[in-house]
Length: 252
Image (cartoon, rainbow, N blue to C red; front, side, top):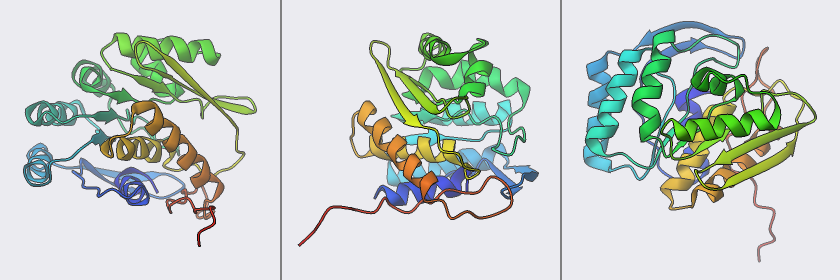
């Protein structure tokens, strides 16, 4: 329901062909993460190089890294192959609360990946960790989005799903303009893979040539529907529905 599985399903739903370079294999379900096996650095680098040399990705995203060494390896590959547009999903903690990133890897993300990012998509806690700001309410989201762009990202989408209140507020800052989306908060336990799905959906839109704001808006709508249509599986944080949004228009 999360990670590369969620990414590939999302790419398929958006009608683009997804490829992957696996950085870690996890044993997890809706309740939690029970094991993590990090892929050797040379294998990660070779996966990226092998795909890029043949298929020339039109957009890329990153998710779980685990260690600073993996961050450095992927950053080197992004730089070597000039991979852009690049969506950085700073995965730090699983929906179950399990930590997925070493403390020293945060500094590596800030130093090596933020300056390469077309867009960074942190939730509130990830934004707090990256910026060292307390982040409270919409003003806190605004401040952190601006700080992330100041730190090197070309744009920042600070998500409000982990906040409180009856509405979810998502704020995008692209260095010159701010865009804000408000959605009613959906009371559900089915939130496994929401961040992965959103960043993958944005990446899919960018790969098709969509403008950033349009890609973000379509991705937010997709995630909302994916939550509403979730299959209600498992005993913990259930996965989303990654099927394409049904076409409600009448056709002859």
